[in-house]
Length: 202
Image 1 (tube, rainbow, N blue to C red):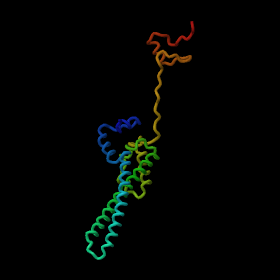
Image 2 (cartoon, rainbow, N blue to C red; image 1 turned 60 degrees about the vertical axis):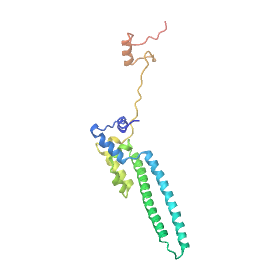
Image 3 (cartoon, one colour; image 1 turned 180 degrees about the vertical axis):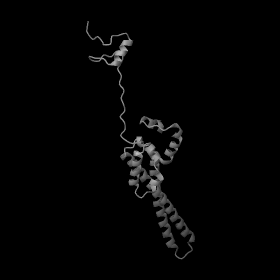
Image 4 (cartoon, helix red, strand yellow; image 1 turned 90 degrees about the horizontal axis):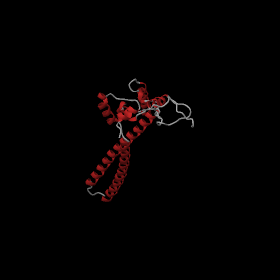
């Protein structure tokens, strides 16, 4: 499997050796992989199920509490309070994960729209924490990406991907119709043959 520096090098981007460690650290701190994203989605679903279960348990306890009438039910009340506090914590965690997922989507879409060549490398150069707290995330993400795309040390991370050059070669001894190129002529000279193949039938 290729590492990020090998992938970047294929696109004409190279990080100096003395800066690779800091760059890799920044990427790991700011970038989430597809696996992380899927795990996050699963956690959101699990948290949602916990909230539903907590609601059902709370309602059941409240009904039991009504059945006790005037009896001392302080333990039952405490259990209800604990469940409601747990639900608040779960909901807060759920909303946080949901916001992280939405931010990741917006960031990836913004980088694609700005013709970013490498999502991981570009994300590492952004102030992700500040962008997450922004009230106008899409606009601020677009502005931050525009700034990177115009900066001298990062504009090479943006633009249309360069087409891959397909190298072609001729098989030794292959005859092409009519003429011969310089490479063929040199090869024929090394082999002691005339520069142009003789195709006359004898």
